[in-house]
Every structure is written in structure tokens, then in C-alpha cells.
Image 1 (cartoon, rainbow, N blue to C red):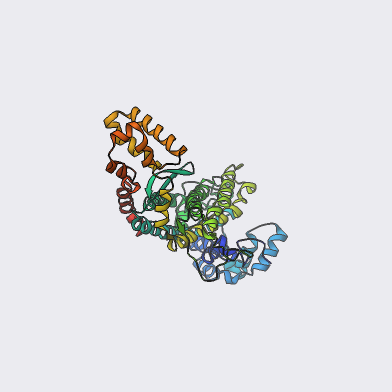
Image 2: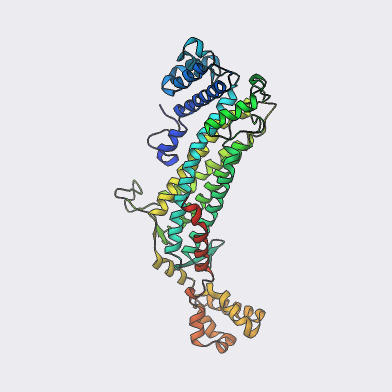
Amino acid sequence: MTVSVFDMQSLQHLWSTDELRAIFSEENRVQKWLDFEAALAAAQAELGIIPAAAAQEIAAAAKVQNIDLAKMSAEIRRIKHSLVPALKQLQAACSRENGEWVHYGATTQDVVDTGVALQLKEFHAVVIRDLQAVGRELARLATAHRDTPMAGRTHGVQALPITFGHKCALWLDELGRHHERLVQAAPRVLVGMLAGAVGSQASLGEQAEQLERLMLDKLGLGTPAISWAPARDRFTEYTLLLAMVGSTLSKIGNELFNMQRNEFGEVEEGFSEGKLGSSTMPHKRNPTSAENLAGLSRPLRYNAAMMVEGMVQEGERDGIAWKMEWKALPECCLIAGAMLFQARNLLAGLKVNADVMAANLDKMRGYLLSERVMLELSERVGKQTAHEWIYEASMHGITSKLSFADAMRQHKGLGELLTEAEIQDLTDPAAYLGQCGTSVDRVVAQQQAWLQG
């Protein structure tokens, strides 16, 4: 029986991917605990703390296939401890003598937190890969539509002309900063721990520092300067970065959702055979991919907020705050990863309707070029006079349902000052795109290094 959207066969594709569910599955979670125990034993054997034969046997037995998860779960419920039942089964999989050396000197939080760091290490590789894939799609769209004019909108209404490529380049530039943040955060986040019960490493003896480093080197994780059991900023930083990535992707999804409204019709998401929009309206082609992308960042942000709450810890270990991470952190990863996967597919299949974008530019009948005309005329009559004349012409024209060109023709000052050719040129949206094309070129060139990996 499944109750979570991450596990329901009918819904899980909207919230996660097969690859991500495997990373955060119970099987992989337990395997990471076992990887910790194997690395600990191996490091202890190298330092002469435990027999080499014990380390070898522990490593051979440290496979999730040797753990009866149902039995482990039942025992967890019985004894109210999350790790010991798994350790008991690992011990039982070894000879009596060698099994005694399992988990020697470590504590539960060492194992669980290091296990999470190992899961995040796997996840981080997926996120970087998929972020690059999304970035490449945006670079492609930015380049292809470098000079495709469309209405730039502020406060929800048309403002000035831009290009669709410029919009995509802006998104790409933002994703590039997210990539930089994630890369920079990795050394701080992908860190394990062998600190003991209260972080003092008292149970690990004089070789504690060397042992911790040796063990974590074997796991491919960083070594902390001191226990981070009650310092939850590492995982919290990562989830907050994922929330930022999700917010950017949500913005893209929401923008593409709105651009698909029938009244705009500027883009269309890919349509696959059999895709159904409504149980009662057969004609509908709903923007389901864009709306799902726009919506997923909400639970992602709330889970990230829960991680922030978890930073408020008591003493040297706080189970109340710590255990919240067991829900919030995997869900942040699953949702963020799903968003990247879906964003790449949405952008790859996106159809850009350049003719509709051009038609929408004409809906304002030239008035969105008022800034251009004002700046052009400022050198002739002064900025304030130019603003006043264009304001007068615009208010009269809008009230009288005239085009901007006709409104200028009918205005005494403007009609005398401007030639017909100038009026035509000054009301051409494609002639007032500023540095859109140059900006696209610059951004796409700057982002190539991380896009190619």
C-alpha cells in the first residue's frame, strides 16, 4: 500500500524520477549505512585498531541484500532505535568473532548523517548533469530566437519590445549562477562524520582524527574540523540552494504557462499522441508540463523552510530537530530533481510562435514605442517637452482609438516635427530592441564552460 505521491504509481512521475527514487530508497539508505561500517572497519584495520580479518569479513557482509528490511523495520518499532536492528543483522552475517568489531567506537548519528551525505553525493551528480541539460536547451532557444521580437511585459502589461531569445538568455544566466552556487557548496555539504556520542571522539582513542580522515577518504567525502552533529547548516544550505533552483524553474514554468494562454498563444508545449486535456472538453490542449513545473516549487520551498527550522538544535544532539530532516531533505531532492527533468523536456519540445509574438506586439498599435520617440525627440525639443507632447498625443489617441502613428500625425507639434518616414520607423518594434541580440550572444558565450561540463 502506498500513500505518498512519491510512491504512487499513478502520480510518482509528477514528483520524482526512477533514478532519484533509487537514490533515496530505503534499500540505498541502508546500503549507505553499511558502506560506512565497511569503511570504518577498513580504516580501523589499517591503523591496527581491529583485526584485518574482521574488516574484510565486515566489508564482504555489508551488502543490503544481507539485510531483511521487513525484519529490521519490525525490530525498529519494537526497540525504538533506527540503526541497531540493521547493525545486529550485519553482525549476524559475520562470524561470531569478527562480528564483534562491527560499529566499533561509532555512534548512530555518525552513520546516519554520513549515509545521507553519500546519498547527496549521488544526487549532486544527477543535479549537475540535469542542470546542464536544462541550460543547453535554454542556450539553444536563446540562440535560435536571438532576433525574434516579442512584447516585454512589466506589471503584467506590455512595456517595450524584447526578443524571446533575450528572455531565454536571462533564464540561462540565472541558472548559471545556481550551477556556480551548487559547485561551490559541494565541499561544504558532501562531508561525513565520525564524532562519537557527543562529538568529542572519546570512544575513538588517540588516532581519532587520523581514523576519521582515513574512513571518509575511502567514502569520497570531506572531513570536518569538528563534529557537526548539532550544526545542520550543511544540509540546510543545500536544500535552500535547491529551493532557489526550483524557484527559477517555477518562474520559467509559470511564464511559459501564461504565454500559452489562448489570448497570448506565443508558445506551445510539445503535444504527444493521446494527450488529453479534459474529460468533458475534447478540444483542450492544457499546458500541463508548464503548470506542473510552476507548482512543484511550492512544496520544495516549504520543505527547505523545515530544514531551516531544524538548524535550531539543543545540546550536542537533538532528535526532535534532526528527525525532521529524514522527511524534508529527501523530498527537497526528489522534487528539485523532478523539476529539472521536466524543465528539460518542456524546453526541448517547446514550439515558439514567432508570428503570434509579432501580432501581439501590434496589439498596442505602436504605443509601446513611446519611449523611443521621446528619446529621439529629446535632442530636438528637450526631454520634458517631448514627454509632454507624446503624453498628449497618446492620451488623445488611446481615447479616440487611434494608432500611435495616427495620434502623432494629429498632434500639432509632433505632426509638424516628424516626417512620415520618421513616424513609420519610430513605431517599428523590431527597430527598438536595444542590446537584446548582443546580450544573448554574451550570455550564451559566457555560459558555455559549465554547459559543456
